[in-house]
Length: 254
Image 1 (cartoon, rainbow, N blue to C red):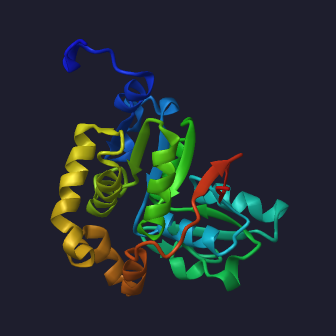
Image 2 (image 1 turned 60 degrees about the vertical axis):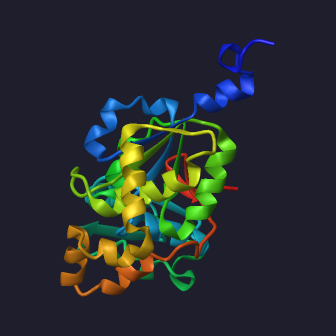
């Protein structure tokens, strides 16, 4: 028998070797990736993707992400029964039902409803990723569910960090590192940004709330008096639903 290093790998082994886990550290870097070759996980921990996961878990029929406030308003006339949610700079846009606080997405408020949502960062990242094979939404709230699902897909995966106004942020990258921590050794090869996110998670994982307390967006939310949103968004595995983009709507993956 030929030495191990000369043997031709099996098809299954070759497939595993080719499975990439990449991290896009800000939406401004999305043009550097051929997103059509990836499953994309959109990450906006404080607060959009956390609220989306919570809303879908609580029975929202669909959440329609749009890039601009004007697009959100355009739904009002044709669909007066839709809930409109708009956030800019951490605050509710005047005249809207609510913003992206997870406490707006309770079962009592969203079960059976369709929500049109625009946010400063998260919906922008989602819009820029729209050519991907599939787009799902990730947060600490559904961490185990998305990691278990990604392991089964055997597809190149791109973790898109929404950041803050196209800049890098700490919380989204740390969460990307939490995914890398779960997927490393499961047939995924990490790119350099994924390795960096993984290493960052090793530094902060012993006390994530304390580590992320120093982030700039955490500071913004505290100034707005909504520290409870921060604490909520850092809960791990309180939901199992995976929101997936289908026909321009985020719905529950089944």
